[in-house]
Amino acid sequence: MAENIDDARRQVLQVIHRIPAGKVATYGQIARLAGMPNQPRLVGRILSRLPPGTKLPWHRVINSQGRISNPGAARQRERLEAEGIPFLNGRVRLKDFQWQP
DNA sequence: TGTTTGACGGACA
DNA sequence: CTGTCCGCCAAAC
Image (cartoon, rainbow, N blue to C red):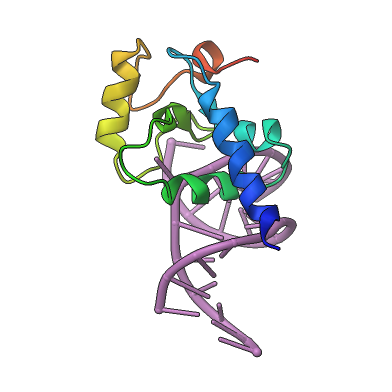
Protein backbone atom coordinates (compact mmCIF):
# COMPACT_ATOMS: atom_id res chain seq x y z
CA MET A 1 0.00 0.00 0.00
CA ALA A 2 1.95 3.17 0.31
CA GLU A 3 5.09 1.28 1.06
CA ASN A 4 6.64 2.66 -2.02
CA ILE A 5 7.15 6.07 -0.50
CA ASP A 6 7.80 4.64 2.92
CA ASP A 7 10.48 2.36 1.57
CA ALA A 8 11.98 5.23 -0.38
CA ARG A 9 12.18 7.32 2.77
CA ARG A 10 13.82 4.47 4.55
CA GLN A 11 16.53 4.13 1.92
CA VAL A 12 17.14 7.85 1.84
CA LEU A 13 17.60 7.98 5.60
CA GLN A 14 19.95 5.03 5.46
CA VAL A 15 22.10 6.64 2.79
CA ILE A 16 22.31 9.90 4.69
CA HIS A 17 23.32 8.03 7.77
CA ARG A 18 26.39 6.74 5.90
CA ILE A 19 27.78 10.19 5.14
CA PRO A 20 31.04 10.47 7.08
CA ALA A 21 31.81 13.46 9.26
CA GLY A 22 33.82 16.10 7.44
CA LYS A 23 32.08 15.36 4.14
CA VAL A 24 28.86 16.49 2.50
CA ALA A 25 26.49 15.03 -0.08
CA THR A 26 24.01 16.68 -2.43
CA TYR A 27 20.29 15.96 -2.67
CA GLY A 28 20.75 14.54 -6.14
CA GLN A 29 23.57 12.33 -4.93
CA ILE A 30 21.46 10.97 -2.08
CA ALA A 31 18.64 10.29 -4.49
CA ARG A 32 20.92 8.36 -6.80
CA LEU A 33 22.47 6.32 -4.00
CA ALA A 34 18.97 5.54 -2.75
CA GLY A 35 18.00 4.24 -6.16
CA MET A 36 15.91 7.22 -7.28
CA PRO A 37 18.06 8.98 -9.85
CA ASN A 38 15.64 11.74 -10.71
CA GLN A 39 14.03 12.67 -7.44
CA PRO A 40 16.28 14.97 -5.47
CA ARG A 41 13.19 16.89 -4.40
CA LEU A 42 11.83 13.81 -2.73
CA VAL A 43 14.97 13.76 -0.59
CA GLY A 44 14.44 17.37 0.42
CA ARG A 45 10.82 16.68 1.17
CA ILE A 46 11.70 13.75 3.39
CA LEU A 47 14.25 15.80 5.31
CA SER A 48 11.82 18.65 5.78
CA ARG A 49 9.49 16.22 7.53
CA LEU A 50 12.15 14.87 9.87
CA PRO A 51 11.29 15.24 13.54
CA PRO A 52 13.54 17.56 15.58
CA GLY A 53 16.19 15.80 17.63
CA THR A 54 16.76 13.15 15.01
CA LYS A 55 20.04 11.36 15.18
CA LEU A 56 20.47 11.64 11.44
CA PRO A 57 23.32 13.83 10.11
CA TRP A 58 20.92 15.79 7.91
CA HIS A 59 23.24 18.79 8.09
CA ARG A 60 25.66 17.04 5.73
CA VAL A 61 23.16 17.30 2.90
CA ILE A 62 23.40 20.43 0.75
CA ASN A 63 22.42 21.38 -2.78
CA SER A 64 24.45 20.86 -5.93
CA GLN A 65 25.70 24.43 -5.81
CA GLY A 66 27.47 23.79 -2.53
CA ARG A 67 24.95 25.96 -0.73
CA ILE A 68 22.56 25.36 2.13
CA SER A 69 18.95 25.48 1.10
CA ASN A 70 17.16 24.92 4.30
CA PRO A 71 15.30 26.93 6.93
CA GLY A 72 18.01 26.50 9.56
CA ALA A 73 20.93 27.53 7.39
CA ALA A 74 22.86 29.19 10.21
CA ARG A 75 22.73 26.15 12.46
CA GLN A 76 23.59 23.77 9.65
CA ARG A 77 26.58 25.85 8.65
CA GLU A 78 27.73 25.90 12.24
CA ARG A 79 27.66 22.11 12.45
CA LEU A 80 29.51 21.68 9.18
CA GLU A 81 32.21 24.13 10.16
CA ALA A 82 32.52 22.27 13.46
CA GLU A 83 33.30 19.15 11.42
CA GLY A 84 36.02 20.96 9.54
CA ILE A 85 34.08 21.92 6.44
CA PRO A 86 34.95 25.53 5.49
CA PHE A 87 32.56 27.96 3.85
CA LEU A 88 33.88 30.34 1.24
CA ASN A 89 31.53 33.14 0.45
CA GLY A 90 28.62 31.13 1.83
CA ARG A 91 29.60 28.05 -0.10
CA VAL A 92 31.26 24.66 0.33
CA ARG A 93 33.80 23.51 -2.24
CA LEU A 94 32.11 20.31 -3.35
CA LYS A 95 35.20 19.52 -5.35
CA ASP A 96 37.09 18.97 -2.12
CA PHE A 97 34.43 18.05 0.43
CA GLN A 98 31.78 16.06 -1.40
CA TRP A 99 31.42 12.51 -0.13
CA GLN A 100 32.81 10.01 -2.62
CA PRO A 101 31.49 6.52 -1.76
C1' DT B 1 -10.65 17.15 -7.40
C1' DG B 2 -7.54 20.65 -9.50
C1' DT B 3 -3.75 23.78 -8.56
C1' DT B 4 0.23 25.35 -6.24
C1' DT B 5 4.51 24.47 -3.47
C1' DG B 6 8.94 23.07 -2.37
C1' DA B 7 15.52 21.60 2.49
C1' DC B 8 16.36 20.19 -5.96
C1' DG B 9 19.01 19.43 -10.42
C1' DG B 10 20.44 20.48 -14.85
C1' DA B 11 20.45 22.86 -19.27
C1' DC B 12 20.40 27.47 -21.29
C1' DA B 13 20.37 32.61 -22.17
C1' DC C 1 27.42 35.95 -11.86
C1' DT C 2 21.70 36.16 -12.35
C1' DG C 3 17.53 34.62 -14.01
C1' DT C 4 14.38 31.33 -16.76
C1' DC C 5 12.43 26.84 -18.04
C1' DC C 6 11.60 22.09 -17.52
C1' DG C 7 11.28 17.54 -15.22
C1' DC C 8 9.90 15.03 -10.94
C1' DC C 9 6.27 13.98 -7.30
C1' DA C 10 4.15 13.99 -2.50
C1' DA C 11 1.87 17.22 0.44
C1' DA C 12 -0.67 21.26 1.25
C1' DC C 13 -4.36 24.19 -0.05
